[in-house]
Length: 428
Image 1 (tube, rainbow, N blue to C red):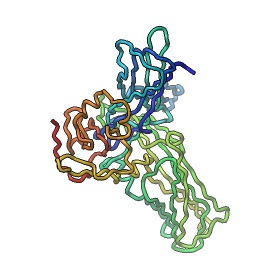
Image 2: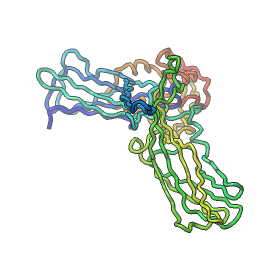
Image 3: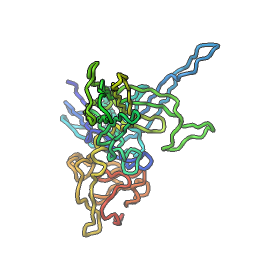
Image 4: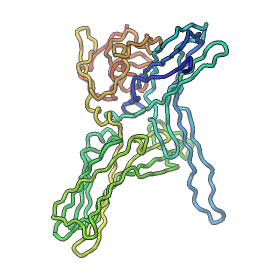
């Protein structure tokens, strides 16, 4: 057993950022650095870093030339997305720590415009928290590192918000004799689930038979440029041109009924189960950042034999959004607020679907008090409150449109409907 061990424990399994990147509230990432000492040890410093990186590498496809075969060098687009640091043990006079286990709490106030974690065919977007322990003398220190998963959850008014509510329904016809309809209760689906689709075949005459049904979900990953033809950089949320695209088959289910096929009666409905793989291990959530876009396309193909013996292939494409479960379950189920007797906002109901966010009144507060910028900013605020802007300190509904805003106790998507919103909280 090593004389000194270091580990990092996060309070939440993932960081949830609601709404569009330009208007999203931030997130307070909290956790504990656990220091285990076999003997009394002098510690010089304990340094903590939250960082994110984007690493992209691809070979552009060139048009063939008559003079010479096309050659292309790999293109890389690597950049740092975030670097935030804090010292849990200040680098000053070494302090003697007794043998045993020491838990040191930390909190990082993350910005709301971070792109989501992504495992791509041509690279990745990843985040992590790393702790570095520096001891005195010739004794070597140690480090610990844990990954942090950042998920973007569409809020009201975002480009994917309708996906959680609108039903999926597409249809196609073969003349006036045959029609096929694909239906599902929503335009969105979580990862690691069974997608149960409904296919309905309608006929105007008898004699048709179904040879096969196939459902397939394809993922399209694109690299986009942020520079237009006039060397102007596109702003946040604007789409640049696609410079590279790759795709993969995420899921596929085929139902075959033999050479003769299954006779159709006129109004026939078939269920097709499509197994969606786990996130980051076969499928990637929807993503749209300045450099990367990930989207999904669902296709149902029906092979039908006509009374004349002709085989007709009918394909129905549809857009399907693969989103985090909390996006699908929690968009309409938000915390409610009301005015208390002292004109301060108190929470009257809390959504069970909303991920837990740091609060001094939660169970996480049993850790050692956090002496950080976060505590200073939130000092004196009521235990339940609206988002607080880190720049101006303003606390009201308008801050929901501020991308630097964080939420104390509850994470609220932008433009969320909140009861009794006309409250003014004294900042003194």
